[in-house]
Length: 316
Ligand code: SF4
Image (cartoon, rainbow, N blue to C red):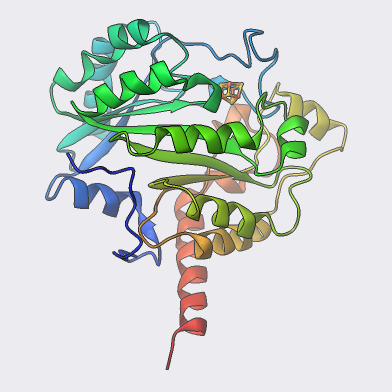
């Protein structure tokens, strides 16, 4: 298996969107195969919720907003079968799936516990890989050793949440870790044969006007294969929802976020893929303006914005 954590800036692969989409990334990895990510619940909690790091979690967090269609009471193999049937009904063509453990912190356990859950996954029907969402404080060296071993058996991506490159912002949103821990974790993870993805957010209080450029430059400086950029959106019953009701915080407008996303994308390396550029929540959980529910419309506008910028800077 090629070492996918080592990105190759000498191989520009900017696609039809003006940036490298994750679909293009997977098409290079699995030629001729249409891949979908399939959400599963492994049953973990999070050190920022259970008191190990903090209580109450990140200020924006409500795990009900993640993968709301997944029945977490079912065992993993049943969730896999349910998910495959659901995705096949929804999409005209699906040839294989990546098992995506999104909610909570999916490496929050010792290597033996992780092996009990994840060793079975590469053997499931139509499984092409595993993607694990987690936090930098759930990736000690023993866990990374296990993930390196798992990555020899399947296409593995580890998605690490950071959200902001400013410690003051991370403290403000109660992340329970600082930026240095994230960068140290990325460096300890590099070269172990699995891909890294970083989760970042625009619109957080205190991020600063140049947050898109700073976040893009940070991602581009690290051995990260893909990014997920989220717009701040306020989810009901979270700490940020209370601030929202008190008028202490505002969401970015669609126009502001569109501009920030465009500027962020311009800073990435051409080999870095974009897994997500807009996030939403189920309508009954979402406070504030519902513009983020129109993902396709937003993506079309991102494409137009990126194309316009490229025309402006293109050599004549
Ligand atoms: S790390 Fe993730 S699961 Fe844990 S509190 Fe923050 S957003 Fe929620």
